Length: 381
Image (cartoon, rainbow, N blue to C red):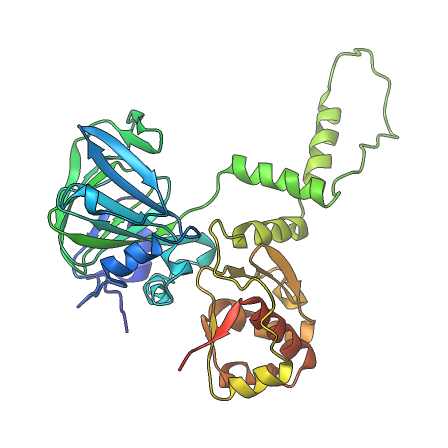
């Protein structure tokens, strides 16, 4: 079982002193760390058109980036190139163990697990990320240089690569297997592989206000919400026809804010935050299980939540049975509301775990629908 060790820090201390504040090198964050997959298995994933992958290398001194799927690497030689696969957790069940080690940060902040394989001298160039990341070193060694947060000029080294200008490092470190480099947003960094190596990056991000407001506008339009007009039956005479006075500005503001109540914000946020940005490994049609099949199989097998599937609930609405899966709102009767935290917090569902609700026809029928959709699947023997 994979276990995170923060050295002398507790998770509470880490969040207070480092989270979104400053970088940290965690030596031996994982004891006896083993790569989650081999380079050959990673190359196999990068052959699949559903998997987001990139190759980064230099050609005649110029940075190059290519997007998968890929079927050959021989022409790249034995040094100076990197293969990256995004959303490894969508395709490799074993990645869940790594994510769980960081569950002192809620899953609504989680983005994905990225895996990087690099040959000696390989890297993606100096750059700045807008998200928090724990870079977990697997096999091999990689040198990381990290600069301070500040004004750094960025430029396109390639249409698919945004790099930053040279920076003075505040961290210059060689990561060994099991070491972790934590980086908050905004810190320039550059990793160069010293020998054939793999690293696994657990990323956490949020959306910008611009992106969320844009998506909220689409949500209002698609659901025909916020169609009410401003009413002003108490209007007084205006002596300046071109003026918007303080009372009218207050009316406009009140109209906008009135629609942004907790119900709308939680519904929109639940859909927005659980929508997957990458393909999920879902079946093209229903798997055809019956409720009786699910009940019988649960007695001997554990249900596993599909990697990459996002499920969330809100304190404000969970007692009403509301929660969110893969961009959709679901509602169970309030009598089943206590089951929702188990569905959302636990990656695995055993018979004993959900036994209190298996006598409910509503619950087992809904669970059957989710299994047939591929949201949960039975652990293979």
